[in-house]
Image (cartoon, one colour):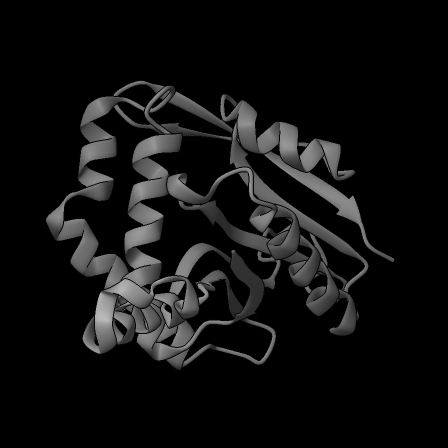
Length: 203
């Protein structure tokens, strides 16, 4: 059994958040990003940079409207089911059972694109699920929690940028009511990689 939920990220989550981002990118982006740039984005030097950035985002957000949320699982085990382990073994099982595992992360902030009103439009900046925790409902919980926060902050619309070929994320968001709003950008990653902007009305 597992106890699941979403909460605000804490400073002690920084390493786990960074690791989750890198694992999710390696797994989810390998089909459509060039190998070289993807390796640069997820290598040791990049990991140190991302860790510093997540530390700042979690510990010192620019405004109260900048947030990082994490989806977590806590393993629940009945230690009475392990009597043969002896006291020390049962303590080890109990410690393992209480461990909280980070399953995904999302961050949001006021939208920054010049064609949008930052007072009424928020942006989902990051939305990632650890590959080991997919299809367990964490994505829906994270997205719902994000929308709740944004709605409480007075936003009426939310946007996010996704890779055009990231059909898994596009499909998930589109099934939740998001749609392409017509904005595009192209990244030079050794070859052109297209991104599209999705939007949804949360009013």
